[in-house]
Amino acid sequence: MTTIDLNTLPKPQVIQEIDYEAIVERQKQTFLGKWAAKRVLYPDLPMYSVEDLLTDPFTIDNEAESTREMILRAEINDVFRATLLYFARGGNLDHLAAQNDVVRLPGELDDRLLTRVLLAITGRSTGGPKERYQYLAMTADLRVEWAEPYRIGRSPVIYVAIFSTEVDGVASPDLLTKVRAALNAAGAQLVNDTIIVQAAVRKVANLAADIWLLPDADEATVARAEANLRSAWEIEQKLGRDLVTAWWVSRLMISGVHKVTPTSTADETAQPTEAISIGTVALTLKGRAY
Image (cartoon, rainbow, N blue to C red; front, side, top):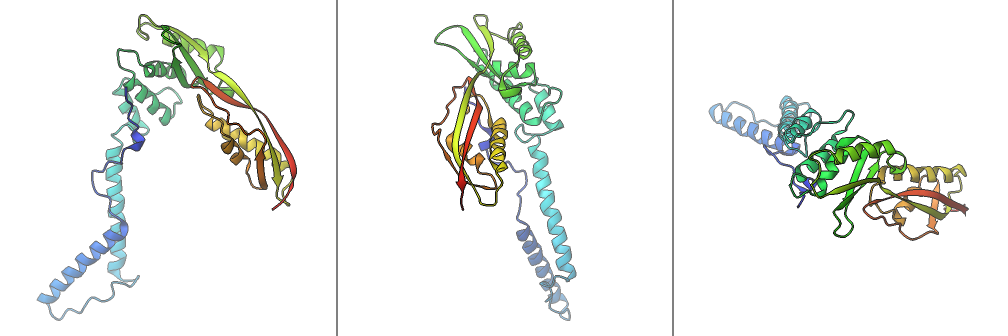
């Protein structure tokens, strides 16, 4: 089954969105054309020659109306886009989700709800695609950040690795119990499938690097650099996400750090059912330099 990446599609438009300066110039030329036409009928009318003055009444009115038109065009397109799944947010997304028999969980944010709607749509096949099990797992509890179903060989046993919003992504026993109940409920699985729900494999990566500070940086900068790395990984950590050396070195380069040279240089790779956690971070202060 092919899943369309909605993020790659161009933004749809009901009405053309015109650049502000283009609207101003269009209105100006229309006004000057009408003024010239009136001078044909009324030769005593003076030439209009103050259109470039910021205090000119027409210039002020033209800029105000051009801004209004630009905003109105954008609002028309935004209202239309809100009827489309990828662009809908808040109540609009709730209604589109309901059309696919998906209801927002208490406290669920828009991005997660959108993910569940897409999983529900792609998981409708009677062949039992993995998106079906991912949808059911994420619907079982808000703490399920992601689920990865997989088989070993041709076995009818389906393993479902759960990545949680809990500490280090490790699913607690009560969360696994809830997901297990949801996936084994009547109508949730194919007749021949046996489902085993388990926490995602936690792979610990110990990091090491030499670090140099700028001359005016205090030594607490080293601890702040490590804290910045750990907090950044909490956001990025996901099932199957590799911990690349270039990435974690860049997160150590905070204000006050001159240079970081990793001494553990191998990228930490993760299988689709693994989540990498950062273990020890050994930063050796080598001195100061510009």
